[in-house]
Length: 257
Length: 191
Image 1 (cartoon, helix red, strand yellow):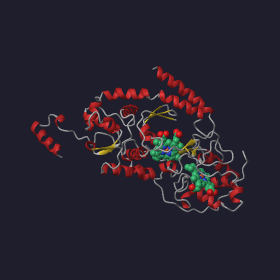
Image 2 (cartoon, rainbow over the protein chains, first blue to last red; image 1 turned 180 degrees about the horizontal axis):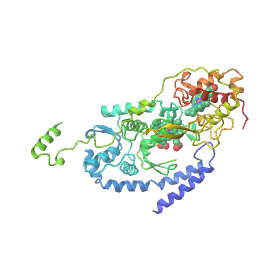
Image 3 (cartoon, rainbow over the protein chains, first blue to last red; image 1 turned 90 degrees about the vertical axis):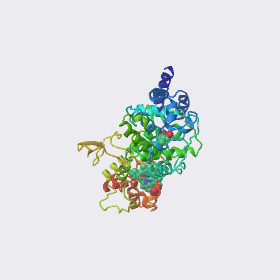
Image 4 (cartoon, protein in one colour; image 1 turned 45 degrees about the vertical axis):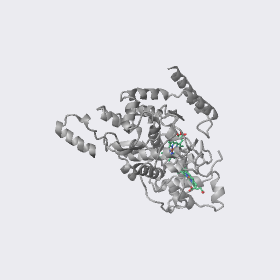
């Protein structure tokens, strides 16, 4: 609890700093130093803990390993390879969808993909793979190949009121330039696939990668597509591959501006 | 397939007593909502050429004021100052349930990418538009038609542009593109 309070204290200081920060950048050097310190006391740790408790109701890691058809020892590496094609689910899916299937198999109520509880559980399960290299294999089978292709297409397609695509703002030739005080991140370099679910300071809550994608869609006026849709999972596949290509590791929960 | 057959045999034998004996079909056990149609509806036509309408009065102070307002603001909810004459902050839209709802009107937020006189927190993805008239119009490097086309649909002269498309997507109408154009090519105070 002390840890949490400390984090909250940091947060309010952050908020104050944000107000005084220069106009060019959304994050000043002082903010950045604070951010480093916060990494040690990530406010999202409580969500991950909550996720662990919720996950316990479904069984333990052994139950998950069994469901996925891998040994407990292999489980962390296997988790580091999501999203992946799961034969008995018939699709390329995220960990959250695996958890739903486990719930249904056990006769329990499905937790909604977009609910805070699911975000927490997802964060907990993904954190089991912490320190593993991101291990997505987009050549593993025809299904993941197709998902990767769909992800690339979804990423590249301009749409919405302003005619923008993800690539409009995240392509290699534009990274680091400033969009209204925010430097545009290289989605591979910041390891989206390895650092989300993350605590989003500007939203004071835990967000999953797909929830983060929705944020960009909303801001840029692209029609927001639902979490868990084929295209969303495919986007996660595409973006996770970007981080894999940079040999990034899993480190959950992340901490973001 | 084998499990299914075994399953079937077992269920007939025990008159479907125990589901746990056979592997349940989990292919529908999780949510996978459909987004394909949503994305399809969100697409818009290919690069389109436009001619600046004759009705475009680039010297109209009111048009310049509207262009300025839309240039510096993201939408009617975020915009703090009252909207200039001929512009509203909220528009009424029919929702899915048929009810009319007030929604913030979207503006250009051009300042997210372009610096210009008096800009606050300008981005640098697009070129600076400071002193645009003196540097580009008076020197004949550009004309108003070029600016109009660029704002309406920048893909015409740059297929891989990072700039927003503003007329072909129907987010704005011709008059509004005129307003932006008038503002960009106008003489402005330095601050």
